[in-house]
Image 1 (spheres, rainbow, N blue to C red):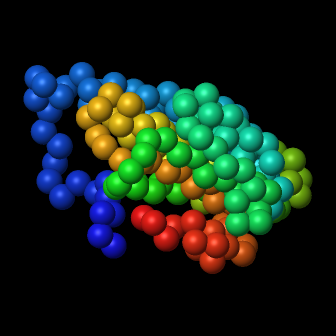
Image 2: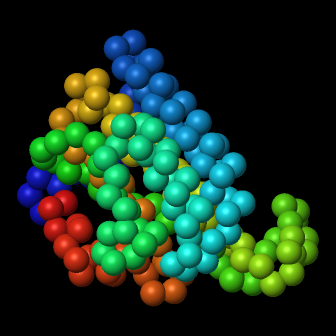
Length: 178
């Protein structure tokens, strides 16, 4: 759509004296966010629609970073949006945080349940949620510093391993203005 922003780089980013510190600051912010979220979100291992702890950690962090958060969007108690800035373009970033039932795993290379029958992370939604929020924070910093105009919106999307929370968000028009 018109006014839609895309974060894909078609050419490699060139570091100059002018942007060097800014680029590295944002990389550092993303890494710090990513590591903090891994500490709190990864151990949560919440499955579909009961990702209460995972969702809460992401929401709390987004609010602490100055985002305006709407909880329980699209009729899902653990779905949320976190927004900063105003106007166009609106940059949307999605993050997932649900776990899979029955795949609890110790942090080792051989299969051994941490807790037999418990949920665990199998395809990195814990990483995706934390990393995506880190990217949203970096974009927010650019907007806050006046280096980028528009709005950054993070979508907390639950239940991606089953019914797909994004489907209900789309049904309710949450992506319509991107």
